[in-house]
Structure formats: C-alpha cells, structure tokens
Image 1 (cartoon, rainbow, N blue to C red):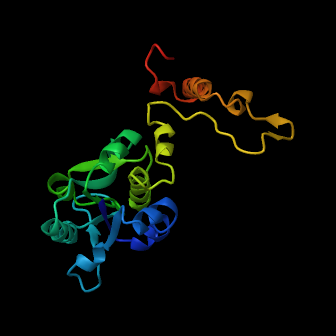
Image 2 (tube, rainbow, N blue to C red):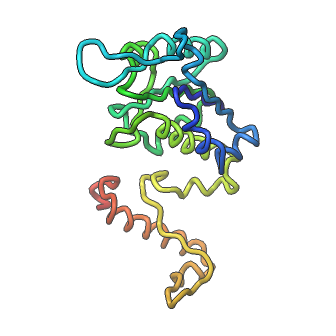
Image 3 (cartoon, helix red, strand yellow):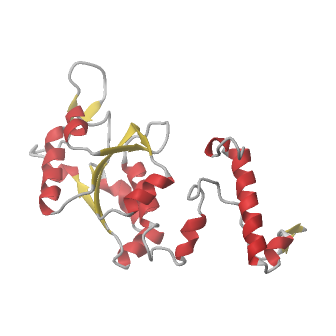
Length: 228
C-alpha cells in the first residue's frame, strides 16, 4: 500500500511515521509512506503557499495552485483510490473507515493548515473528507498521522500477531474488554480467575460479556436497543 501525504509542515510528521508499527510496516515493504512538502510546488520565490481570504475575516488560506500542481504530478504517475482532505467538517473517521482504506492500493492525504484550503480544492480535487473529532487543530498533520497509523496497522503482517487487531475496540462495534498480564496478583489485586482457567471457550464468552458491559457503561450509542 502507498500513502502520499501533502503538507506545508513535513517536519510535524517525522516522529509519528518514523517509529513503532508504522516504521516496521515500511521496513517490511508492507507500506510506502511519502511525505511531500507543498512548498516544493509553489512558483513563489519565497516558497509561500498561502494567501489572504477573499471577502472576509482573518486567517490565511492554502492556495489552489501548488496543491493542484502536486496532486496532478502524483496522479500522472499512478491511480489513487481516494484523495483525502483532513477537515473539521468532514465525515467522522472510524475504525470501519480505516478498514475500508486499508484495502486500497494508493491514497493521498492532504493536510489542511491555517484557515483551510481554497474551496475549489475541495470541490474539484478531493474525493473524501475526514475529521477525527469535533474540535479544531492548527493543521491536518496530526489527523493525517492518526489515520495513517490506524490504516497501516491493519495491513497483513504489520502486527506481530495478526489476530490482535480483530479484538480491538470498534472492530465488532464494541469496546475492548479489560486486559491483564503478569503478575497474577499485585498488592492483593487479582486477575479474574476465569482468565487463569485455561478454558478458552469460557474465556471468550467472559471477554464478550465484559466487552458488552464496558460498551454499555461508556458508549451505549454503539449498541442497538436490544443490547443497551
């Protein structure tokens, strides 16, 4: 899988994309992640990629010209399944969306910045828009890193145990149950006996019940009426 990220602040993505599972997936050849500096595609001698908004208010807007030039360059080399923009008013990015994107071959993620981007970018160049929550950030670099992490970890071979992702929160519409490790007792706090029993079927049943209870307490909106 190939992910191309367009940003005017590439240094913000160096650490999130250079460690842990995302780095290992790249080292294994499972994912190609290319970060493109939008400033390399402007004709402005000062490498400026933003300007004042027409008509109203404060705040700088990313210009359409360098964005179009970079996207045109990328799409001339390969087909992209989605060209994504990170925006506060986009569709909520969920585990289900991560699952869909992980099945694709090539995607572009355009990071918003400042006041946003020229609306013509969104109208004519973007195929999908996502938000990671109902809040505003300085730029789209962190959402892009979060989405990339969520997608890449789902690629076959990215995790040490591929079944690990199957029990993640939201994969089956529920929150994950609590997990435990050694020691089995600490300061009198014990691991539930069922987890030490060795009866996998009973453990699986208990884990599902705990997952359902956890979801009912914390995120009842994820459940249908019969489960609440």
